[in-house]
Structures are given as C-alpha cells and as structure tokens.
Length: 335
Ligand code: SAM
Ligand code: DTB
Ligand code: SF4
Image (cartoon, rainbow, N blue to C red):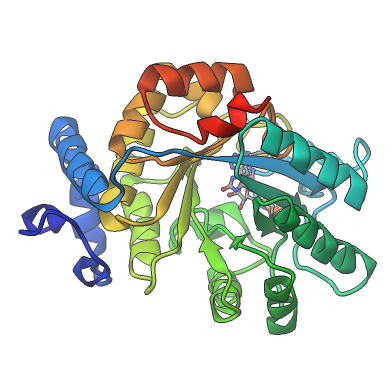
C-alpha cells in the first residue's frame, strides 16, 4: 500500500512511512511503467504542487588525488583516470566568481566538491568555511561534498551557514563491497548522522548502472526512505563511465531505468528534492521529461558536473521551457 490511498487532497509529514521492505520497493520498481508513473504523479502533485524544478550548479574545488577506491570515480588515486596532475585547489575568489556566474545563469543552489576521504582541520577547511559563508551571502543555498567529517566540523559548517551536506550511499549495503573497499557503509551512515545532528540538511542518494541488481536498487532506496526524517535531497545519478575506472566498460543504462528509479524515490520520499543528477547527457530529452513527470524536481545545471560534462545551460533552458516546468525565471530576465 502506498500514499495513493490517502483520502486527503494534500499530503502531510504524518502520512510518511519509514518501514518499507526491500520487497515492497522492488515491487514498485518492477511495476507497469504506466501505473508507476501515474502513482508517482499523484504523489508529486500532492506533495509539491506547481511543478517547480530547482537548478543547482556544481563546482569541483579540489579535484583528484582521493585516497578512496570508489570504482566509479575518476578522482581516485586507485584508478588510472586520477586527475591529480591536471587540476589544483581553487581559492575563495575563484569559487565566489563561479558562484556569482551560477546565480546569474539562474541557479539557486551552489554545490562545492572536494575529492577527499574526509575533511581535515587546517587551512583548506578554514577556506571551505569562508566559501560557504560567501556563497550564502550571495543569496544562494550552499551545499558541500567533501567526505567524512567530525561533529565539530559539522557544527562549524552549520555556523558558517551551510544549507546541505552531500554524502551519497551510492548503492545497497549488500553491493557496497563490490564498489568501494576503503570505507564501510556504516561509516557513511555515521557521517550522515553527524550532519543531521548539526542541523544541516542531508543530501544523500546513489548511482545506478554499476552492475547492481534491481534488488540492490530497492535496498538502497529502503535505507534512504527508512531514514527519519528523510534526506531533504536525494540525488539519483546514472553512472558516467569514465575511461580508466574499473567500471569503464559498462554500457549505459536503459533510460527508462532512471525514470523508474526517480518515480520510486518520489513515491517513497514525497517531500524530498529528487535530483536528476549525473548521466543526463546519456538520457536524452524525452527520458528527462519522463523523469520530471516521475517527480524529479531538481537538476544539476551548468556545463560541467565535477569532472565530466553536463548538458549546456542553453539546452537545459530550452528543455525546461519545452516541458513547461517552472524555474526561477526572474533571475534569467535580469541578465
Ligand atoms: N569525496 C566525496 C564523497 O565521496 O562523498 C565528495 C565527492 S564525490 C565525487 C560525490 C559523489 O559523486 C559520489 O558520492 C558519487 O555518488 C558521485 N559520482 C562520482 N563519480 C561518478 C560517476 N562517474 N558517475 C556518477 N556519479 C558519480
Ligand atoms: C551527486 O550525487 N552527484 C554530483 C554531486 N552529488 C556532487 C556529482 C556527480 C559527479 C559525476 C562525475 C564527475 O563529474 O566527476
Ligand atoms: Fe571519488 Fe569521493 Fe570516492 Fe574520493 S571519496 S574516490 S572523490 S567518490
């Protein structure tokens, strides 16, 4: 049973369920696509009236040279794709210049990434805090993704005004060892708890297309949906298979798999921002529109993700206009 049986016109937090089973979620993932989309639509329109899509821009502040061995990631020193020699670490001015440009293009969230296993105290962390407050002063939401953190670091980030911390679980607990060996699922969960305790919004999602089964996808969604409260933001990435990573020979997923994943995330977590994240270039316009129908209400916006490319800003504006979803158009008009 899902919220489709709800008698009220709207949905409220009391309607949310946090005791999903893997089988219930797998059944949703395998449901007839037409029925799944209909169910996701009903929930999306009840929970998030008005069809708004948030535009979030991404910037890699520290690229490559990461000690973790995530099989999908071009920034790991364990992968032949490591980008260490190509890029350094951006300074405060560089970052704020990019944040201003993102705002001028219409983004209202600015996400900054550091290819670290964990945050360490010192000059780079002090600089991160200044970047967070600088981005907030521009009137943008600020999100950071930088690996594991301590309680003290989480509270300092909260004090600097950080809106959200991104820390993905990536896949199911059962499949995790196939993808990463240098950290545990439990360590990821503990970081997420520290973020939550510091009063920072949680951004946590995963990647599909890494060779996982439908049951693994269901199991990942179970962990996310059974969190109470739900992560405020749930990025759904399709693997970008980068040459030199152990997953570089995997073929792209069927775009409909992405539509299904988004729809089920929407059904399970009605009020969360479901972010259609990496892999949009491989999806094509029609599948992206289906993802919006399925309840995706944010995209990464800007010509690049962290190290790989993303659809061009102009192409995205056209697509969003064509789909008739609303974004913060006033910012566009100001340009
Ligand atoms: N090092 C930090 C961490 O892992 O939390 C932050 C940066 S890391 C690049 C952020 C997220 O990007 C990862 O958790 C993963 O979900 C996503 N990601 C990285 N490489 C990807 C790829 N090739 N395709 C899809 N998503 C990817
Ligand atoms: C997320 O879930 N996806 C974004 C953001 N959070 C940090 C990162 C995608 C990275 C894709 C590969 C790259 O560009 O390096
Ligand atoms: Fe890449 Fe983050 Fe894994 Fe490092 S921890 S290899 S940056 S995904």
